[in-house]
Length: 557
Ligand code: C2O
Ligand code: CU
Ligand code: CU
Image 1 (tube, rainbow, N blue to C red):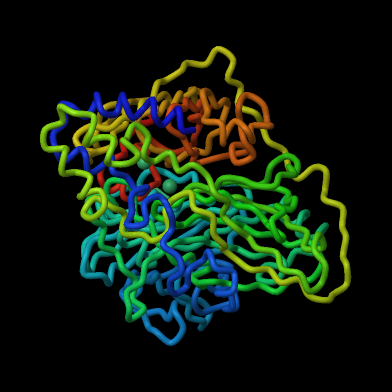
Image 2: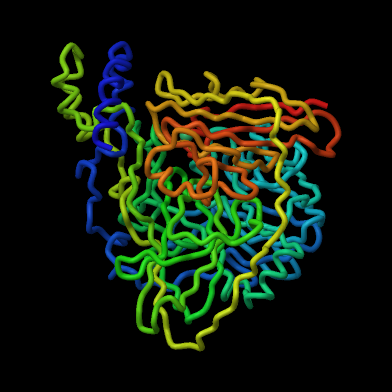
């Protein structure tokens, strides 16, 4: 690691030589906060300290906040400003989707629908700024997708009406307002969209999984709070460049969350709903990561369960996992943690400022060491890649239930890639912006066209000089074909052929591309919508997305 960073340090310096003072701000990176590369611990709700974990995990019920709603008829959804007590006793301004059905009120409902059913809703914008809803992972016509071009102003409305064509799985929905996605999603505009099918029901039956009890949707987010318990979102230049990191970790909006479990299997539908933070998730007892089975990813169940001890989860991605709490004894605690990893978000940087100052010939750079320690630092006390707890799972007395995992969960049709055309998608950075194929987002610009019904391989490459980007495609699920030139912390877990990790299996809509990597994905552009369709490809680091790390592509007829 050290030698790699040293190497890029030199190329970084070379790249910077002509870049002028502002570029330096980016190369300071999150790694440089007031504590250097270390978390600033302790502080209130500090997730590193296990003893802080005392608050009961919020579990969605049948109505109210995040209530599970079996969508019946057409819905009226209001995007509105409200408040929500996230920290005990302190109301925090919050943005919500409000709706009702059969006399019950819901805020940010967890929609649940059968595959093949029709979804109908009207979004009403009761916010003082533009907004729109995007159905993340759902295969809809472009005009139902919540493209930023569909954004409605204050008081506006948008009618959604589409068939839920996806297979069973854990999808989600969130705002996609042009250049406001990061702020609005951070302040609350996001929730789950669960799709049911026969495979899902079979699994629930085989393992006695009940939604809200032994089957737990779990959205993981990192936030910052001010002294009054209000959400804080004030990216400085560094945060805007690298993505906003929080230092309080919320599981279902609960800080320092606790879920008491009995010695049996639990399903966690994990969603990374953070703006920019990547998690390396593990169930840990003492210092030992326990086994868990990954049974699904973004687009539903895998063909078979895969046993692992840790997995990366990048913003936008989902991981459906089974954890047998019977691996611990009653009285013991297990923690769902994010393990330490190399954030690689600073590749090409000096890593520390002193070196740059002494590398000579950098003119104004001499004073930059000071900026790195002040203006150029992340505002989060919890750096990317730090180890911390997400959820405490105390194991209590209970009947030891052991049920064999089904050997086969579902059928995954492999997209035939032999002889299919390859398209290069190159990520880069220039003038303080991350780019896709050299371009920054323009609403009316179509970056490239693909043929309806065709299969393409997209070869997404991330330069060694840069940071990880979770790349997300609208409109279609894809399959990860191959990972090339991965950093050691990724290749160490690449047990699934062609460099792939467990997070790459099955149907995907978001894939993490680390610095220096090339990730090849296969997409089948078959659809039954009328006319040509325009969708987005973007980075799901929401600050990157809002800053234009996004392109349109058109599926031609
Ligand atoms: Cu979840 Cu275009 O995003
Ligand atoms: Cu999406
Ligand atoms: Cu990015």
